[in-house]
Every structure is written in C-alpha cells, then in structure tokens.
Amino acid sequence: MDVVNQLVATGQFTVVKQPLGFIKILQWFFAIFAFSTCCSYSGVFRLSVECKNRSESDLNIEVEFAYPFRLHQVWFDAPTCKGPEPERIFLEGNYSSSAEFFVTIGVFAFLYSMAALSIYVFKLEKYREGNRGAQADFVVTAIFAFFWLVSSAAWAKGLSDIKEATDPDEVIELIPACRHEHNHCQEKHEAVVSGLNTSVAFGFCNLVLWAGNLWFVFKETGWLSAFGGTYVPSGAKQPAPDSYDQGQGYGQDPYAGSQEGYQPDYGQQAGYEVGGYNQAGYDQGGPTSFSNAM
Image (cartoon, rainbow, N blue to C red; front, side):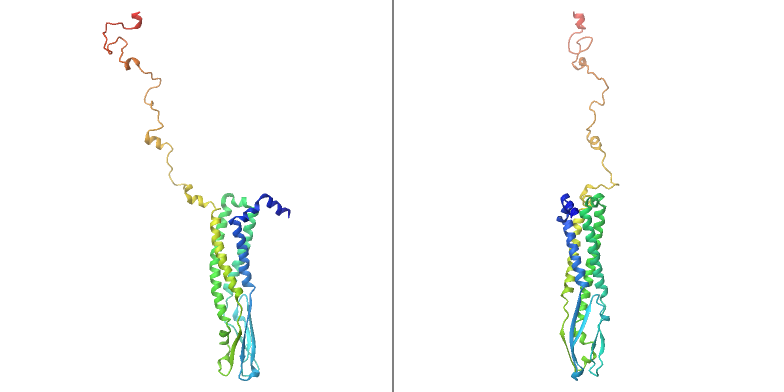
C-alpha cells in the first residue's frame, strides 16, 4: 500500500487516465475475455435413435465436445438396431489449429499489455527517453493488431465449421441405423455455442483496440515531428547564411571602395582652389590666402 500511495502522490498513475494507458487496460481485459471464453468451453448435444425393435433403441444419446475441438477424437455409442451391441461413431473434423492459434494470441496479448502497462506506470520517463521504447511498442502493437485480424478471422471460420459438425441433424447422417426407413432418429438438444460466439466478438474487439492504439503509440515515437517537416535529411543542401546578402548587396560596407582615412576636399567640392578663386569666378590677382590678406 505504501508503494501505491507513493505512486499516486507522485502522479505516476495519471497515465492510466490518458488514452495511451486507458486503452492498454482495455486490451488487457478484452484479451482475457477472448481466450477464456474459447478455451474454457465445453458443449453437449443430444439425439435419439428409435429402432423398429424398441428394446434396441437409445432415446438419449449425449455427445460432449470441448476445446481444442479435435472432433475426430470425439465418439459416442449408437444402436445398430440389429442386436444389443452398440456401434461406436466418431465425429468429423479437427479444428484445433484455429482455436489454439486464437487462444495463443490472446494469452500473449494479455501478457504484453500487462507488461506495457507496468512500464507506463513505473518507467514512463525511461520509456520516452530517446523514443526507443515507444518505437518498439509501436512495432509490437502493429504485430498484435495483424495477428488479431488473422486469428479472429480463422477462428470465426473454424467456429462455423464446428457448428456444422456438431449439428445433430448432421451427426444423424453418420449413424448407419438412421439410414433405414424403419428406424426413427431425431435431435433432442442442440449444443449452446453462445460462449464461442462471444469469443469471436471479443477477438474482433481486440483488433479494433490494438489497431486504434497505434495512433496514440505513434505520437510517442517522435516520427510525427519528422513527417511534419522539422526533420532535415543529412544529404540535403542548406542555403548559405550570406547568400541573401550577396544576391541583394546587403551586408557590405558602402565605403568599402574608398581608402582608409578618407577626408573630403572641401576646396574642390566648393569650387575653390588653394591658389585663388579662379574656379569660383574671381580674378587671380586677388589674395591667395587669408594670411596674405592680413
């Protein structure tokens, strides 16, 4: 309790309120429901065989089957209507591959979601450090989304075949005594497969959860900023920092062409000459300097 209180005080459990952690909790629960409703199933159906000689009849034949649905190993005794000794009848079909594959994906998804949730709560900073943890999480999440699609589709097809193979009307066709018109065979009770239907529904719900969680994990990888344009490939040429100045002429000294210590010749600018006022229009006989005038 002290550890839990400390985690609550530091705010590390706030991640479960975010989509990243909340969806992981849903994945954990839905994975449990998916594989548990499949691997814990056990069904039974009943039929009756009424022979012309009623003493040889069997009006309550029970046939039980369960996970992993190797129906070719399931058998029952049926009367032959030719004597007191019954005949052993086997069901048809082996659907263990699709069922076991579905349960295996569910178990591994449950374990991974529990481990990932623990990392979110206890090691969130390390998970986000360098984005490596988030990138690995994204890859594993994508793999599980794909396997949920494959396993759920395969198990849905397998369940459809199981329903057909355990249909009492179909099983009656396997009994030789029921092929004679003097004998009467009928079903008394069909197997209830609502639990298996639920497992298929949970399988596709897991597909939606894991595929939808890809977006929230993707935002933690740092790839979104790269796709947004902030990433510059190493091989791309970057513009020179002074290219704009060179193209427009900015950044240059306007007096770069002049000599250092340049001093304007006010005499030449005003049209005067040191020796007199000839350029200003005055006679050369005038004073040549202020000192001579004095």
